Image 1: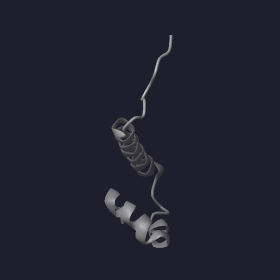
Image 2 (image 1 turned 30 degrees about the horizontal axis):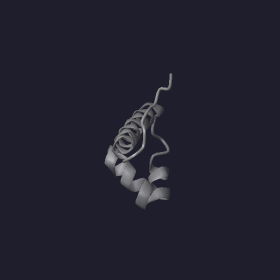
Image 3 (image 1 turned 180 degrees about the vertical axis):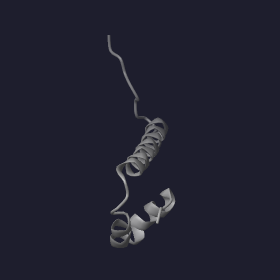
Length: 63
């Protein structure tokens, strides 16, 4: 049974064993696509966090 992206995420948090057992037969392409989505989300959140921290220099160039 195909799982949606949000159902996979909530399944990993709340029903880990059942979710992994049901997803054993999933092909690599959908798993890789979901991994790339999570990577992009993490990158956006880290960028937003680093730009909003007060007093933290983002990049300094000394010549």
